[in-house]
Amino acid sequence: MTRAAEIRFEHVTKRFGQAVAVNDVSFTIPAGTLCTLLGPSGCGKTTILRMVAGLEYPTSGQVLIGGQNVSTLPPSERDVSMVFQSYALFPHMTVLENVAYGPTVARKPKKQAEDAARAALASVGLSGFEARLPSELSGGQQQRVAVARALVLEPSVLLFDEPLSNLDARLRRHMREEIRELQQRLGVTALYVTHDQSEALAISDKIIVMNNAVIAQEGKPRTLYDEPVNAFVAGFIGEANRLPVTLNRLDEKHATVTLGKASLILPHRGRGDGKAEIALRPEAIALLPAGHRDAALDGTVAKAAYLGAVMEYTIDTEAGPVFVIAPVTDAPLSAGDAAAIGLTGRGAAVLAA
Image (cartoon, rainbow, N blue to C red; front, side, top):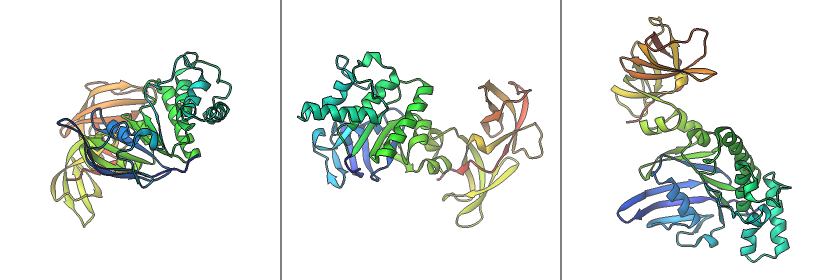
């Protein structure tokens, strides 16, 4: 396998006519890591992936792979392979022929191309499937063939364009674990595009959250979850309640944050004294009986949903609606019941100014 390569964007902008798809974006993906581009449709994440692949060229700025400026190089000269959302398998070719196609086009001898294809299929657990057609495979197996076809070229960078979106939820979870295990075992640099936040959190060394053609925040999954810089990131990385609070600084780092009848000490993240906003994850909230002495806010159940292992509630409070996840009990609350919420002390973050 080719040595993994660092990916670096330096002030990259991409325009399509008057529309700006990527606006002055800079980031670095260390060699051998898996980085996920996460964001809503139209945020620029797929355009970034295509610029790494050489399927689009930047309007300005530089794209570097392994320290080499590849901004104007065609895909064939970039040492990059892509796994497409649709898998893009040739329906008339066998699994072996599909995987051997890249080396064959690269003019490798037929036996060498087929040996490489067999090795790639073995690496994704598909030995014995060589003679089958794509139509004879399950969705998960087709996805593995697409990965093997990308791996057989021994790229220094492996690109994934929402590769699991065509699979059901259970298979999607299984396949994301396989992709992560394979990437770590091979040590290849991977850039992964998805709009699925749980997928991004589960597999990534680093996440870049995109919004409106710019980077909203980048960092390790836990950092983005625990310390979102703004309301967009808080809402896009996991569930989050945005609630108004009163903030009083204690020192250069921490402040007392008051929500209703309860207070927490949290990093103030540059906010001054007075009104501020807080992001509360579901694990930051305890569902309490109405009038409980530890309640931060009293309210009324607006919605209640049974999800098997847990209940999801929306509690209307004076600070606004609050989304709560609670264990299933013998007497779950129903819409219209009185309730209260308390603060657990974790999963809360002041949103930066």
